[in-house]
Length: 339
Ligand SMILES: NC(=O)c1ccc[n+]([C@@H]2O[C@H](COP(=O)([O-])OP(=O)(O)OC[C@H]3O[C@@H](n4cnc5c(N)ncnc54)[C@H](O)[C@@H]3O)[C@@H](O)[C@H]2O)c1
Image (cartoon, rainbow, N blue to C red; front, side, top):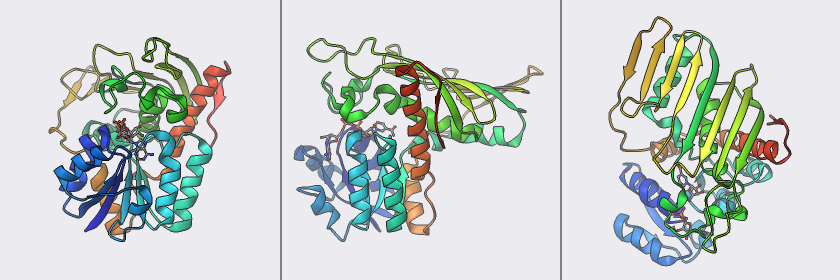
């Protein structure tokens, strides 16, 4: 049994990691740490495990083999590095970190300690994305020419356990990058993985349109970003991230290829549609996905001693795209992503 310590007991732990680790046959939640102890106690009551008084106590516990970091973004790097140095494997929530330097330090810590560092970019495990990638790789749709991808919903105040408009999600020092670091980063990661072509250059517009702190001031991070991306081989596309899609979720990705179009989550009922140049339409439906697959993949990697499905390097690449988009907007230029 792999003992799991969970740091941060908010929404992502409640809805995803606690249920998925507790139901994986090879893992057991050893315990939790959260500054507000009551949140940890509720999870311990539901899934078993102890409540630690501090992170250090968890990191010193020999029953903890791996740590799942689910805190506000600004703590990801320091906690991940401390955990790996204490001999624990790490599953860290996205974004990997708030700066590129922090992300690099996490990867270095993983190399130095030999501990697994995996970043929780779960879109890669969704059936529609996996099937779309298989189709794109098969050559059935021809060459990829361009794309558009979006991730938008009504904002983190509808998701986080902190429902107030003073939530950490709206503070630059906690998140690093607003909606791009929250939602855009998932799509930056997804698109590079789907089309197997790194983003090299970006342009962007960002704005704080609607999210206001409790005192009525607009939040200090962007609540909307629309970015233009160009990949190494010249594929161009748009990436949109929004916290103000009050009418509902948009998680669509559309890939335009020389033999037709691949639409993912672009239709309310059909998760994947291929439309060929011949007008042939192929619709794919999938079983309901009850698990994100993140915990299962992390545990498999630990048990089998294999590299993680989403290594730190992939998380860092996605962060580089996000940071380049912010730089492109703030400096009103085309920004290079860097290798
Ligand atoms: N993969 C995804 O799809 C996904 C979705 C949502 C959130 N996330 C990520 O998960 C992380 C947590 O987000 P959330 O939605 O659960 O937020 P949340 O606000 O619901 O919960 C955050 C929790 O962290 C606790 N916390 C604050 N400082 C801490 C510290 N120093 N040590 C330990 N715990 C601390 C808070 O008390 C709170 O319980 C973020 O990095 C976020 O980007 C990922």
